[in-house]
Length: 298
Image 1 (cartoon, helix red, strand yellow):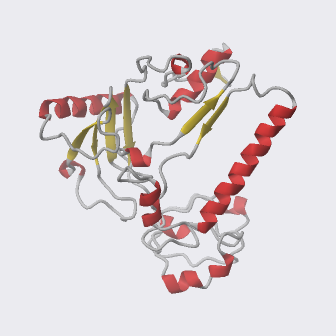
Image 2 (cartoon, helix red, strand yellow):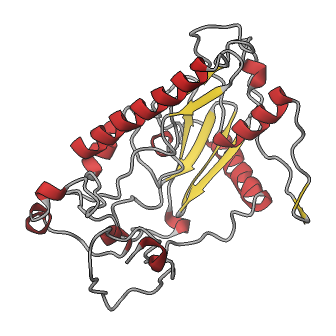
Image 3 (tube, helix red, strand yellow):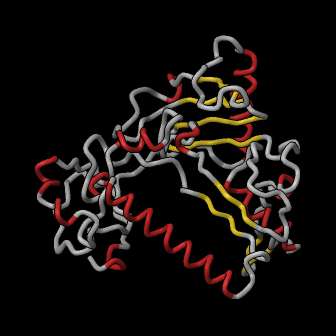
């Protein structure tokens, strides 16, 4: 976790350099900055004890503490690709219960965001509570810049923009949210949001190699996020009709946006080799290699 804290401090410094450069050319008021603190919830892929090489997780090769301690002085150097333990992920995703890979819980999806644009946003230091999704960023930029989204790129017809611009909320904090429905799915963890309601199921924990039940056996839960920010009170038994409606909505969205059929993760390496390791010992059960390792110097 110290390594991650160090890289967070480094990132903060580099963002500061960028903003300072924009200030120095006199364009900070005319520049929209969208800062999203993360690309998902904190990752629990470090298993129970953490790891010095993330690829061991992707190849289902658990590391032992004595093995990791051999690399203690290297932690964070180019010879390691470290990962904190699942316990740290749960702590960092508080007050939510779950983590990255659990797209059906806000702990796996919700991130802080700051939008700074003095020339276009009159409100200062205010908080917005309307629901938004990362797919809303592109349509926001298109709208405020007056640029239409591309219909064809390199001769390829483009799918329509699926997000909703956030610009409506810039100067009206009480405006009704326009992104009213959003599905979530990853590795069978699936859910759907509609006007504050969130219906979801937890199919697989990130630190487990496989689910403990079938998709049909998954238990659906229901939350009112407008009144229950941390998703603590399951209303499934109290609002059975609402849950049925939300389940039907998920299936409709899943079909519309090509979620079906559900895909299971492959055991793989995907280009993040161990940066300085001169050899690998492959386990016999590795079923898939991405073929890109040569790009990373292995």
